[in-house]
Length: 197
Image (cartoon, rainbow, N blue to C red):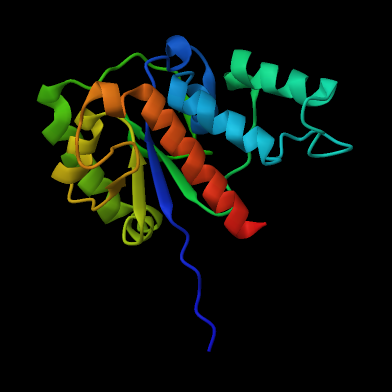
């Protein structure tokens, strides 16, 4: 008897740059921080659909590939990135809680501070109660990449997760800073791309 493969869930913290409070964009295009740049770069390399016709994915290093990568880096809010085919991807937003990657958000300017951790955690618990998709996605394998402050929100909300950006349980910026988090995110996405191709 065949078993059904349960897709893992990846939660990426929101970035400091959130559309500057202007306009709307898909959640996976709203943030221009380092983790989201890495996310979009890997998705382009693995051939994510951007509504571009002919010869997809473009040959790496070609003029088309370079132009797309440049557009994704410089104008993320103009990109309509399709959902990841084998991972449920969510933003952990300081303002909106858990947001599915293709949901539309209005740009905002709100940062998570320690005093807001419990309130945001309570909101995430409320989201699980009222949204069956979020509840189901948080029951399986949950992976997180982001800062310790955002990880504290998930712990406070009772969301069991593996922090892929940490090494040996040590939160040390020299070991687990943004460079290590970006590398961990890249490895994670590439691993799940290989599994489904």
